[in-house]
Length: 318
Image 1 (cartoon, rainbow, N blue to C red):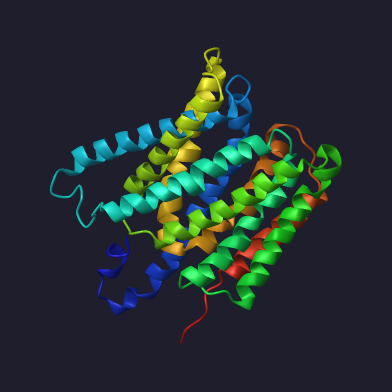
Image 2: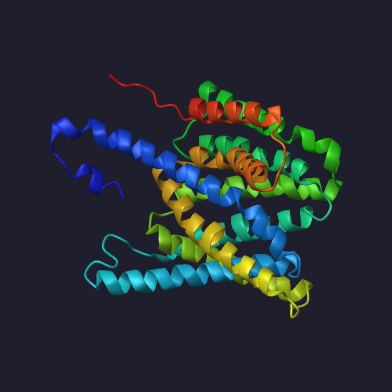
């Protein structure tokens, strides 16, 4: 993906692509925040008549279907000469993304769905806030993104913003069961493993890697759903539509952007969606659901955005 940005040899244009590329990464991050932060409404509609395991299964399998259709259409439009130019889908790449799909996508999806049955969303948000911490630590030991004081301060600022945002909800929703909290914490670490593993995996086309990731995860969740829960034969049309929309946007399209952005900007940068998505979801509640605007939203917005900026600030080179 960097080849197109490096083809120009004109020295007068060296600085511009770097700035535009950094801005593109931020735009992609915000897009992920918007999509993932809007997921909760679809989940609420889906689980009305579809159990969590079957909702996750339908979401992932429909997402894999949309990605497969996109690759087929893209291949037909590009033609045989360009469809796989520079892209080698090796057994190693399939193994990497299959691992991410099962261990770092399907399993935490199911864990959070079951944690939600006994644990409030505010508590789960705090537990999920461990994802950037775990990502920073794993990236330090496994990738070139080393842990620095600046990066840790940024992560702590973002986490503080998340706490400020969800703190008022503790009194309303209460805490949660020990099992639910442990599921949420372990799920956060699995998400972090997925962030770093996506960076370390062989680079293939993001749509293809996303298809492998979501497809293998969908197969595992299908086996789990068949073994644990009855088929939702009485699912409403609203729940089915919600499941399909979840497969198209927060799963298929967002996973494509997620893989592309990690390859471009690194796992630590992408992990900050954990802090920003709840903020967006809260903003939607204020704008469209008549919820009140609290001081915590303003404080959380300031802390989270400042934390992202501090943790991902680029050093000036002269």
